[in-house]
View (cartoon, rainbow, N blue to C red):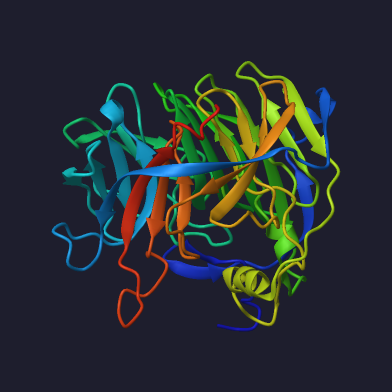
Length: 410
């Protein structure tokens, strides 16, 4: 490949790999920024008081090489009916149904492009009628080669039950990837990234959409379009930052959406199901990244001399709805107390800052990945990011947890 091919990610077009060039112009879609006229709630700079929430482990599932069930890499966890839990194996493209006691009840799914196959498994959910949806996607700052943004639906018998396009109709974007998917009470929210090829050039379109759980029709509620400039040789994180990805969006059981539309300003948009809403605004000072964090971002961009990672963290981390209607917003760059692995600022339905909570996990390690399920439970993915061979390795396992009753004041 020539030096011209210093790009954001690989794209499959007409059976050839074409590399995209960097962007220099960022333009909002017509839908973007409509929230600027909504009422603003000024959020205090500091959060007080701080409360620690300890997690009680309900069950743990061994996913190591000696486990009875062959498991690859668990990438997503979702709640299911009757307190069951769905695990998505993105390596083997399979779904595991786990009982309330932590026993594997069923395993189904496979790679491929046929009806009911689950290529590129990334996120999953269950609807009230028993249908399970699995979408193909990829982590932020990469585009899955040949991605289509498909959501494969399976019925209770794991048979094909339809197909949605959670990131645009077929043909509208040749390569597209779902970056985030949340589902609560049959309200489905997707964040997507896709490439648009026009006669005048190419652009990168990022969309936040609500998907109708009956028809699969998609309603775009916010978006951003980046015009690609072939003369720009650098790949800059700020230009390609995806505001709705990396957990920065969620939907409540009533259909209320919350998301962070900007990177370098602390803003959280809260949208009601019928449109309209409020904007939470907070004074924000950039938090400098550690060298390790900056290198990780640089590697995610491509890890070449042309990649430019920013020196500071984004203003807002994960956004998560709680079952009681409260909103959690993660402040990046804040070190939680001893034993805690993450902290969130908690807001009321009207946007009032209530407290800062930090989540404490038994025997937490730096390799733990915390997933916050839509029903309020927590899943810990442990050991999937480390080697499973050699001395001191961590056996991969999934832990399901809830907030201890005596510590939960929600």
